[in-house]
Image (cartoon, rainbow, N blue to C red; front, side, top):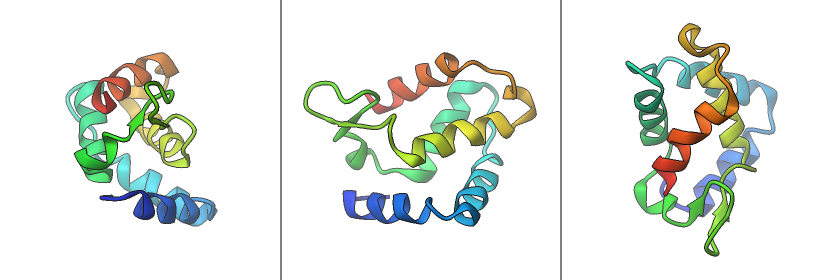
Length: 102
């Protein structure tokens, strides 16, 4: 996604259970060697670097909050669908996400 408008469209589409599940399934195929690499692959698939400059994980420094997006929930669920990361804690997923968005 390149713009807020595209992100808003995606967020609206995610309200549909079918779209949500399809997206989770697609993203869960992007497993890397470790969690950081997996997060990087997912974020590169979903977002342009330019769009992410307007976001921070919890909305610091006047930026928009990423953690409240439906897309963020999809990322968490996609990662947990991977056998390697099924029991991983939220904080472990948040660390590389925060780094990627920063």
